[in-house]
Image 1 (cartoon, one colour):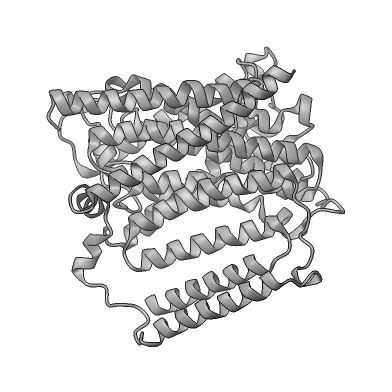
Image 2 (image 1 turned 135 degrees about the vertical axis):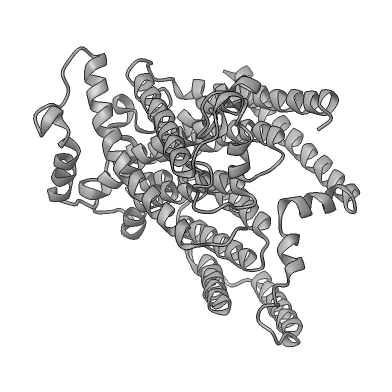
Length: 173
Length: 334
C-alpha cells in the first residue's frame, strides 16, 4: 500500500517538475510547482514526518507560491519565447553542467535498492513536533539561532528597500 | 497519530454531510437576516417561511447556461471553483465536535488547519486570472494580497493559544478549555483571530475581492451556472468553518462556560448530545455574527485593508504573543 502511494507521489513529483520546466506559460509553471511541492509533502507524510509535510505546504505551497503567482499576475509576464530561438554558448555550458549533475544524481541513486525504508517505532516519534523542537533547541541551537538572525536581517533588508522606494516616489510627486 | 477506525469514518461522513448542508442553511439565514436588518421580508415564498429557497436556488444554478469566456484558460477556469470547496471540506477532519468525537487527532492539527486554509486562496486567485478579464484579475490579485496579509495575524493569534495548551493537537486545545475559555485568558488574540477570519473568508468589511461597485463581480465575474454555485457554496462553507474555528480556539469548543467547575458527571450518550448541541449552538452564533456584520458595516478601502493587516494587526498580534509567553514563563513557570 505504502509502496503504491510512494510510486504515485514520486511519479507525480517528477512529472510536475518536468512540466514546470518545460511549460512556456509562467502561471502554469507556478501551478505545477505547487503540485510538485504538495506531492513531495505527501512523500514526507509516508516517512512519518508530519511536521515537515505540513510546514512544506504551509510555507511553500501556501505562502511563497501565492506570492510568486501574485507577482506573475501583477507583472503580466508574457509567454517566454522558445529557448532555442537564440542559441548561445551559455546554454551549451548550462546543458553540460546539467548533464554532469544528472549523472551525479544517477550515480548516487545507483546504490539504493529499497524504495522505502521500514518505518520503525522510533521513526514514528521522530517526525512529531516535540521531537523536532527538542533537537532544535538542544543539539542544533547555534544553527537555529543563526538562521533566525539571517532571516531577520533579510526581512529588515527587504523592508528598507521597500521603504526607500516609497520615500523616493513621495518626494518626486 | 491515532488509529483510524470505523467510527472515524462515520464521524467524518456525518461532519461533511452537515457542512455541505450548513452552507445551504447559511445562505437561507443570510437572506432572511439581511431582509430583517434592511426592514424587508426576504425570501418567504418557496416552502414554509421560504425554507426551500436554497433548493430552488441550486436548481436554478444547475439549469443555467455554463459560459466559459472565449480567451480564458479553460482547464484552470474549470479547476478553480473546486479548490475552495475542497479546502473547506478538508478542515473538518481535525475539528473535535465533542468529547472524543473527532475524525482524527493529528499531532500537528493546528498547523494542518493553517496549511489547508492557506491553500484556499488559490481558488479565488486562479479564477481571477483564468477568466482573462480585467475585473476578475483585479479581484484575484486583491484576494492573493489580502489572504497572505491576514494569514500572519491569524497564525500569531493561534500561536498565542498554543502557548496555553502546550500542544499543537486541536483535540488538546478543546480539552484545555474545560474551565477557562481562551477568550477570557487571551482576549486580544480572540479579537485578532475574529478580524483575520473575516478577512480570510472574504466577507464584509473585507469583501474587496468582489466589490460590486468597482469590480462588477470581482473574481467570479466570468463564472456562471454551477461553477459560480461552487464559489457561492465555498464562501458559505468557509463562513461555517471559520465559525467552527473561532469556537474551537477561543470560545471553549464543546464546553459550556466554566463547565469544569459546575457541570456534573454525565453518561456518555448524554454528554455527547450536550457537547454537539453546545458546539453547534456556538457555531450558529458566529455564523449569525458574520451575517450581522455584513449587513451593518460598510466595506474598507483596499489601502485601509492592507494598513490594518500589516501595521496594526500584525504588530499587535506579535506583542500579544510575546506578552503571553512572558507571563506564562515568569508567573506560571510553564
